[in-house]
Structures are given as C-alpha cells and as structure tokens.
Amino acid sequence: MTTRQIVTITYAAAARAVELGIQVGAEHGVRAVVSVADVAMTPIAYGMADGATPHSAETSRRKAATAASTRRRTAAIPEPLAVLLPLGTGGMLTTIDGGFPIYFGDDHVGGLGVAGGTPAQDAEIALETLRRLGARTEGMEL
Image: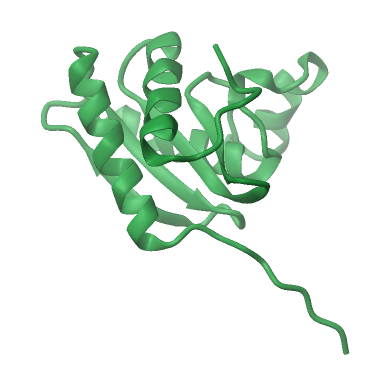
C-alpha cells in the first residue's frame, strides 16, 4: 500500500482570510461575502458582511471551490473551458473573477472566493486579502 501526504489550509488560517476579506471589502465600499475551501473543495470557513446580497453566498463558495480545484484564478480559466467548466460541473464551478488559489510558498492549500462587488472589485479584494494573509500572490496580479 502507498500513501500520499496532502497539505491543506487550517481552520485558523481560513477564518483569518474570511475576517481579512470582509475588512478589505469594507475598505473598498463592498459588503463582501468570503469563502475558503481546502484542496478538496470542502468549505472550511465562510463569512458574510452585514447587508451583503444573498446570492453572493453561493457565488463566493463556487469561486473558492474553482480556485482550489484548478489552482488558478477563476478569471484565468482558458477560453475553451470558460463555458464548459460551469456546464460540465452542473454550475458547481465558475469562471467569474474573484476566486484565487491559496499558496503558502510552494504549497497549494486551498482557494479563496470573494463576492459582493463587481467581478473586478471582488478580484481586488481577494488579492489584497491574500497579501495581508501572507499568502503567495506572484503571478496572480490583476
């Protein structure tokens, strides 16, 4: 029998990301909804700013799951897959901007999803959240 070791985000780091994302959203005038998923797309932490739109809850979850699964920014999904990915997963994954993979050094540990603003605002908030969290942001610039 063989095994493999999987590195994943802790609840403490995920909860901190949610707290930071809501704070950064407020600084941008956005009532943000923030989700963090582990490498298996399992939700680890979630938070919703007071007054955020209800549909943003599901959008942030899908962004986090997509970034965790694909290990890339949701807006960076190649064009041929932009329509097929959401259709092929029954809408579970999305290509709407605002989802980023979470890396600490070379370790991919999950995905961050931000919703509540425009896709461009969500991406700005997510990227700043990663910076403040101390996660890797190289190659993810807007």
